[in-house]
Image (cartoon, rainbow, N blue to C red; front, side, top):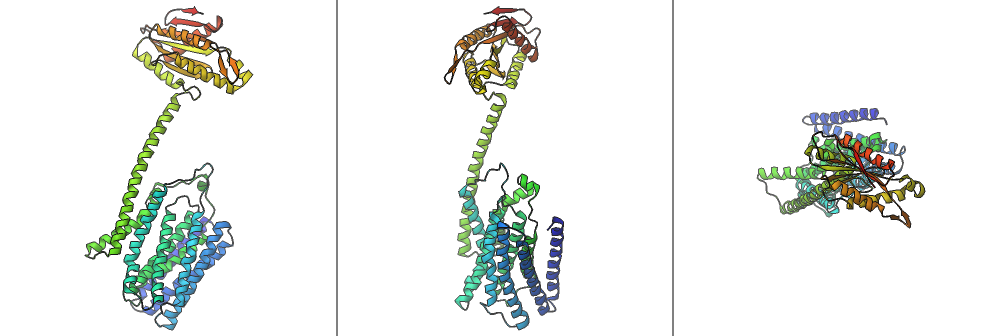
Length: 513
């Protein structure tokens, strides 16, 4: 089904459900029988539609996408049989529905098959190229599950389960059936909430619709059990809305488009609102339960021991959950700080030698010029280094460059800056007027020692150009100084390589061998 057709079907389904519910509610004050007939027939038609759509769509799909539809088809067949018997009892036989009755078996078939259907649907995860699997804390996930289970148990106990237990039943079978409805509803809603908080589920639309359908049925189940356990012979028509809407939502889940969008193939993208929904999903039942308990206390109703003890356990789980979150956030902040420092280091340092790169060297040289303190700029270029790469390969050449970088760093003071500008070109920023010459000589001596890589020795020589900046009356720019030092280095190469040219800004060069 196309997206446009699905939207049309959704709008039509919503209109039909609202029309049936409104018609039954409007007729109820004057003709309870007619309202009940409309209500029951609307439930039956919706259930038959859900069965048909599940079977039809299952024939057009494969794998897990077919499996959950088949399971829901079986479950909805049982629910349809139960609804048919219920409609017969109430509409045509017009006698009180026995408890337990064959309709109960049909109704309880649905949760038996809906549970594995939800699990199959939720087990289909999006797998995008390059994506890394989520590795959440097991303790955190366990606490989230306990919060959801505890909150929904309190909600179920307060609205249906507690009334059934306190009211009892004429027979053990009737009591078991009465307990089965809220218990199975609790399990289904818990699974829906937990799966709904997992953004990796591939078929989000199907899970949402199917989950809402189970929640709608569970809500009306709880209302029915509550009214019946309180002594009522029937429940108001409006409380049957979940029985009408639930099968229709299952129908929509079965016919929802199954083609993943381009966005899902490229990776999950969620709006800020949906991100908050995912984060808060486990706490929505807690919020609803808290509002219910608060309202009861305001109205002067006391909480029974089950509500108090389970509530205390849920609050304890929330506290521990928040403590774990605080610790995780602190660790995340520390990892982010370390990552930021690492990125900053990588942005301003050469990955091969660990020396400063061109960007950082330009910055330090600019600061030295602005401070107007005496300094020397050394431009170091290895002689005939291309032969190393050509004869032994770039891996050996990189190993030689790493050794050269270490020897350069060992030849300077801690306040000096050594950088690799690229390839086999290095630069040194040395403070003072006399120190740059000393540094250059130490570099030449250090590089005179052969370099051993693997089982082979390499002789590395370098030509050095030095510019000494002691007079700042006519300050030069960074590019001008680098150009002058580079020219001095090439002059040293021209005059025999392995030499040193020193010049001061505004003065001629001098050659040292």
